[in-house]
Image (cartoon, rainbow, N blue to C red; front, side, top):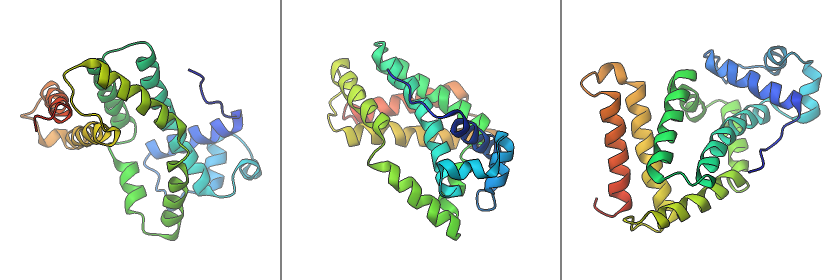
Length: 204
């Protein structure tokens, strides 16, 4: 699997954005100068690669997502089983929850009704049709589902729906974990995993 390569200064800006996200920085008031200062480069350098702040932010989101997709693609290429891959996905969700304070960043992007927020959503939309790592992972995931046996679902849309809906449920659990002390982490993970299998084998 060939890793997507980014120019060093672009990578530095993306890492800076993610660090600012992790610190709780508001998207709507984030400035290019803050990003470049954090990255250790001049403000003018940013405009050698990007036209707007929103392009940098969406690029950083894509950069982070690509790293996770590449981990899953590698597991698929190594012949890992469906349970192992689903478990690793939950591991990464837990790590993201710790790093980015639950779904705070995603909530900010969705709920931001300012002009900047609208531009940001439009930038995200540009990636939908061309996001090749997602396409590659879908192809490999569908082959694994088909080869695993006992899974009746053949629609990629429904397979992703089963996985992502339950991952969102687990994300909700992680965010509100302190209020759900009666449910252990292991119980929540098992519940999510079993739900995915039930949906995929048509028993729900």
